[in-house]
Image (tube, rainbow, N blue to C red; front, side, top):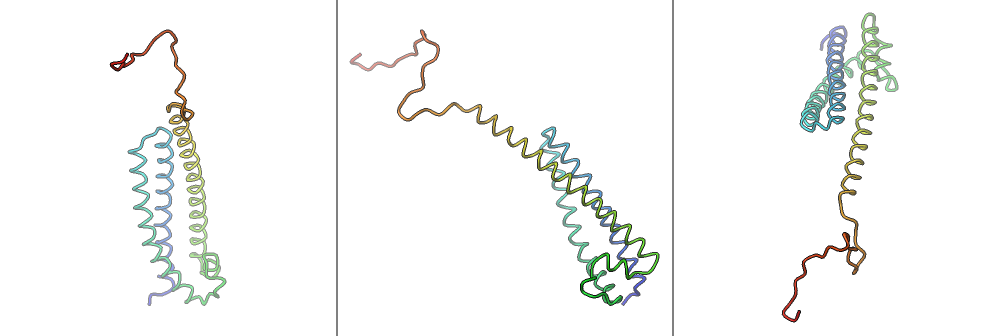
Length: 167
């Protein structure tokens, strides 16, 4: 089993990689916003696909981070209620505790920014959808009452009529 120093180094590196992924995700979510605003469906689809790839990468990396975290929690004999990032930061020696705290703060900040941007995107999509629904509703002819024809417009103009043999 690697030393706690090595495991801490691997965890910090894994968190650095996750921070880069989260920053890239934030950029993609902002690009989605721009694509939604200008109704650029191709760009929106491309950004959404890239977000899916990032999400898969992040899930795979999460397994590695959890493994490293669990090794450190065991090595530092962290109680169950302290088996979180703050507990690990408190138990870690310098300079790792400082580095882990900076990573925790940076990750929290970028995730919050991304969540806010996702909420803005959702509101923009909802507003666009309402506009489309109102436009479609306005483009459809009004419904007729059962059994009554629509009133004629353009008085004085007659429409061609088909007469049978009896006239």
